Image (cartoon, rainbow, N blue to C red):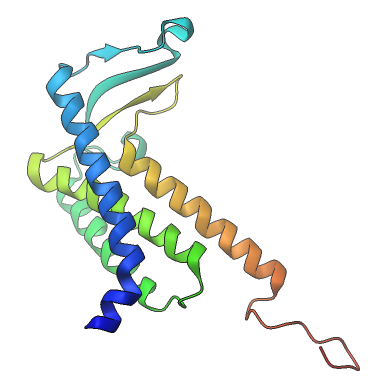
Length: 170
């Protein structure tokens, strides 16, 4: 058990931080804005950046509206996949572990909304981009970091060992 906790320390820490920040910001929005109400905190840029209370009953960026039960099952499977995949990460594979931790925190943050309210609270609106939240941001950053990790590993050789040159040793 001690080995499990040590291996998963980063996973639990980052995911918990994302979940708390996500749920706190969503609660603040629900308490201070009526559904559909917007607040632009930076007058100099007008409505380009604003907080807008929205209820997303679908998937990312408002797709698959009212597919609640199916999406909930898919989200749970994703959470389980992330936890299992994290167990296979090597101790020194920090970038991959951080990316998975961010994705887990984001997925769980949105699952909390789905289970407790039947929708996900979205509130960050930038230009014409779909409205999103902290959990969505964590998932997006996590995916980006995972792609970066894959690119780095590809550049350095997929197994992490030094490349051998033809006709000679490494």
